[in-house]
Length: 344
Ligand code: AQP
Image (tube, rainbow, N blue to C red; front, side, top):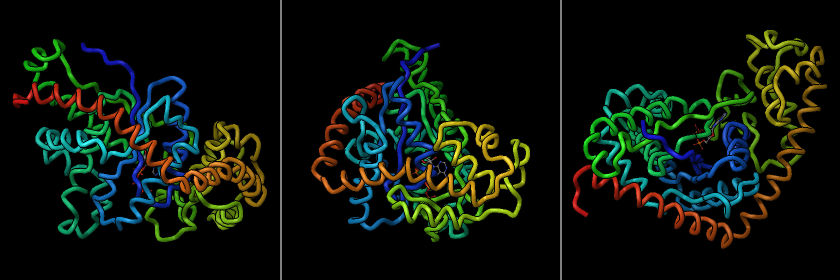
């Protein structure tokens, strides 16, 4: 079997309201992985336009996500930070994958069903094809590891199916072009830790999300200390004190969520948090959570604002990263064209 050098790829959509779920589910993992891997982190602006965007807001949101990556601690010199639309090979490979993926596979994608809702006929074709573009994002670099929140697990499985089918369908030309028995790796999702699915602060059964109409449902990375404190204090809870052991969180989604958030922010396990706060009431626990969240997120939010004010620096990071990404992506596309039989 072909082996592939380990490479990390992931992306975040520039759709506004970057929140604690994006931070704990994805961005903190991005930061940690740079110690052990080569990493490519993408602001996925082509994904953002699968639903209508205001162009001026989109520009500002692209800079906001870039600023968040850097403020959280990603080094744009050692690793690559760029925006997807500057590397046309993402869209090019996505078209090839549209011809590899089966309609039946895409019909099973729950994110499309949730986002399109009852008005499916009116959803964009892009929203439906979103997972094939995501597969192209990863595989155009032949990335092997993809840190994401739990909501992206199904899309990663689809990317693996597409890689497998491409490798099977073109086995003969893959052998001729690169002398190996597979061209694309099977990318592995990295979904670990106590906050892989951060829930809404207003409803512990709903995912914390950028598009929730209530700002009180999420903590935004740019919220100031007072806003964070207010949101945590107003977060829905139940009347019982915290349990001392994990099974006591079953059927208590709001308590479970706040304990998970505390654990992830403090880089400890939920068990450790319960050892410390078991039998404490929520007002005690929430005060500790406010202090922790403000101490961790405050400096990131402040640095994001500082960086966002320096547009030429941010745009420079993106164009430098895009140029480096493009070299890698163009190599893959040349191989793929040869494997498909195109003349170039
Ligand atoms: N609530 C969450 N908990 C853990 N991880 C999360 N992620 C998103 N929400 C949570 C992870 O963040 C990364 C970037 O997500 P995205 O920007 O691609 O967009 P998204 O998943 O569409 O974000 P939202 O907030 O859920 O947007 P809307 O409101 O449009 O549905 C991904 O790795 C994702 O898993």
